[in-house]
Length: 386
Image (tube, rainbow, N blue to C red; front, side):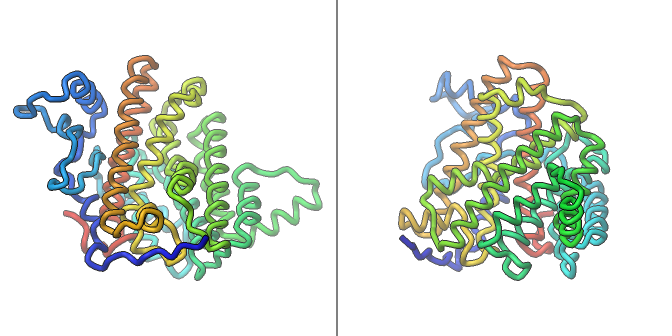
């Protein structure tokens, strides 16, 4: 059944950004403080919220309708604008060399992906490590734009699956007989997106272990699978139910850039902990929450055929756009509180390295929020918060 989605109400076009930009009620950027507050509230929910040191506790207090939407997400640990600009300019030079976003480099620069990685990975100040992560991020974003979303760049839902399968043979290099290997290589030489992924992974390999590269490839494969599901929706003109959309967002989340946290930090979470079901559950919960931040703001920049959680909620539950945005905030907050609860248990039972990894995850969430609230990809850079 094809469901026609309602257009956002003009007066609410900036509601998402307003929510993202309100840091007055943001929990602390220190995950340990937040976990302690969570424990205290569970132990005595009706405690007195007056006095010093209660900002973190207030984040767990149920929100009344009169208070308006409050996003349970921290702010950034740091905002080193000079470092972000250095990484961003190096990324734009790389993009120009390999041929992605030809004629659109100013828009790419304005998106400020270098600043995104600087904000989201405060565990390093090494511009080259941050550049490696930024190249991976931009390669992923470009593949989404060129192959899945933007018709003006050649996106076609009918061929998304074959394009992504061929592209994955660059991420995880395919070994073919000589004759066919030459044909494969000739194909990819004509594809700037292929060059973007190849060079990005080569740069990442300077810092990542074999295991870290393997898990990055695994996460990219999951991302590509999610994009084929999205192409199915486009091709069949189908709006998914909310549960299916959230499954797709579980797969199409921010885990590919998040998964590089220990690579950039110069340490490695052992596979036995990284792939433990409880750690994986916590990490994927955080990744889904992070990508719903994107849904809160990017809707007004998307085409009629694109999907985001507010639009899917409008279609399924017949909500107004404002109600759908507020419901998206509630879903995001539910996921974030689940992550805090999971992280508290894992921090008490896991290794010091796991505690560091979880703290880096929380820091990523805060940096990602800040970037979405200010990035030129979604609004005029003149509107940035000072």
